[in-house]
Amino acid sequence: MRKEIGITAKKSEDFSEWYTQAVTKAELADYAAVKGFMVLMPYGCAIWERMRSFMDEELKKLKHQNAYFPALIPESFLKKEATHFSGFTPEVFWVTHTGDNELPEKLAVRPTSETIIYDSYSRWVQSWRDLPLLINVWNSVLRAEITSTKPFIRSSEFLWQEGHTVHESKEDADREVFTILELYRRLTEELLAIPVLRGYKSDQEKFVGALYTTTLEAMMPDGKALQMGTSHNLGQNFSRVFEIKYLGRDGQQHYAWNASWGVSWRLIGALVMIHGDDKGIILPPRIAPVQVIIVPIFYSDDDKERVTVKIKELVEKLKQERIRYEIDERTEYTPGWKFNQWEMKGVPLRVELGPKDVQNRVITLSRRDAGKRQTVKDDEAIPHIKRVLDEIQEHLFTRAKSFLDEHITPANSYEEFRSLLEEKKGFVKAPWCANQECEAGIKQETGATIRVLPFTDEQISGKCIYCDQEAKKMAYFAQAY
Image (cartoon, helix red, strand yellow):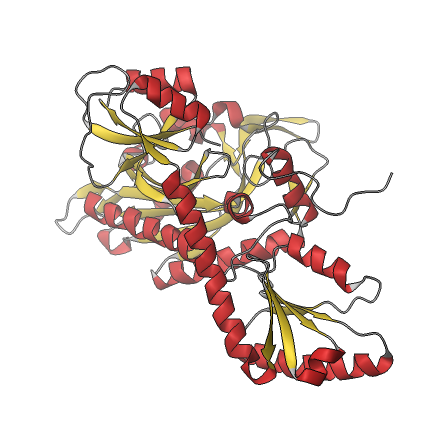
């Protein structure tokens, strides 16, 4: 049976199947032999590396340093912080043997790194002069997700960045939390062209063991929210458990304050979901590994020679402007086949160069986001390409922002609340009494959770949407990945 090359599912009709095909056929990822795991393919890895390069450079500007900690964590470490550990218990992979020999203590394969890192911090931090300690880690973590997996969104192993910092005071830790959240906002909005809501998590939804959690939340085309990044003030919880103390400026011993934060490769999944269409994925130019794909078109050796000379001239100019490009010189495929493949892979801009273009001293450009083709004079090509790449970046963000705004809907009654979640989906904004019992009741009855509590208190529009008692906050609810 012939394997279908293009996307066969419609995004608007079968979103889940469309997403899986878009990820695999664009060669971002593949399924692994072990259930629940995936392979990050070179093209997907190149996108992740673009994100990593941006984050790494910005974190170093903020005086953070990279380090690496072991992937295996003694069970005793996890049990030290029982509240934190209980949140991960069902998801932990355990190592119990080396060869045929049983280990004296079980080792957890890293579900997150707080405990193994803070054990080291207890030795590294002695005085206020050692603070702040600003460490970032690029690694993978393992959490057992065997049944409801989705590439990049939910898998048993994923790549991420996690930061763990130590501070003298709550105020210093607070500054760290919000500095990093703003960095994450820049990553998601300015590079990935994905608009987000910013705010706090409720106590029920915050990171286990945190004083509070801040979050960025995006809305996917199927009406489900996706958490894009979080930044936490861990208070002194872990420092007390792991004895992270310092001699203060006052000559007294003090427990330190911790912050932690992280984003993962689920951002790639969000890129696919939000910007993709029935032809495949669409990559914003600032994050695309290839911003311009050049497709030569020729029918004879003379054509090939003339086209090749013109492409070399264009490439030199692209290099000077640091525009990322690739030339598809494969002769075993037709130009039309190449056009379709690069559209499926989401390259923002295509350049077509054939003998007539050379003769007329023009190039033909095709935008991936809008499907528009136009010819441009040779001497105007580079400034035009730069301008169009900026336009594509802005257009993708504007389009996604319009979708987000259209899918934030206020609810004035619980009946309307449930109806919105079932029919329109998206974020439903509603008054909430701040009682966890109401929050749990809503989750049980609708599957929706509080995704965001805005940083700035919004005007409360009525009584609690669930219990009809006095409301204390406006909350953004949604069903989520």
